[in-house]
Image 1 (tube, rainbow, N blue to C red):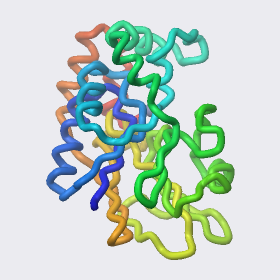
Image 2: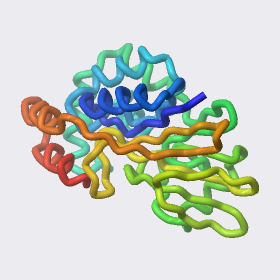
Image 3: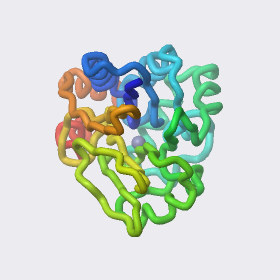
Image 4: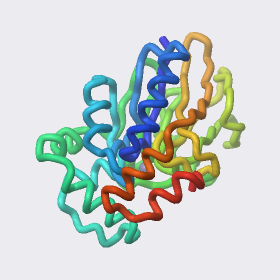
Length: 240
Ligand code: ZN
């Protein structure tokens, strides 16, 4: 088995298709979606239907949650709120219900997945550093857990203390726990515009991060054509 862990797609169909093609080329046999299929970019319906048709495990992201109910958007930034307003108009009731029913945490084989963090996953806490990661580990019962939410690929490793190791190729060592952010497919924020996801091979005890180029101009054109905030098109190119 070879798992592709991918999330924070954020309605970027060009990035999603590029990632799935890359995963196929890497011999991936199973897919797991880390949430935030929709929000920000211009293809919420196509991305939702594509992930749904794959029939793979999916956990709920905060944007999936926002898109599937009518809660007030006043806590969001103006740009995010405008995009969410638009996203809600694109999705039909049945698609919203599918998002609403997504689970917060799932265990697959020997690993766990969650969108944000295992302590109070519905509070959508951000894990940026080792201090933030401390709260997660007492709730992590598997050696490896994948997450997303910050849009920054990152590997937190816990032995006696919590440290980070570079997010490129990571060997899962005995006696350690790993809380791994697989990065963002559709809106990376680590300064690299390319779509990001991770591949996990349990037999080889190996996690490999992948960066994939995609047709960013097309994704940007669609954002502008939909009347979404221009900033959403700009930030894709900045990886911010
Ligand atoms: Zn996100």
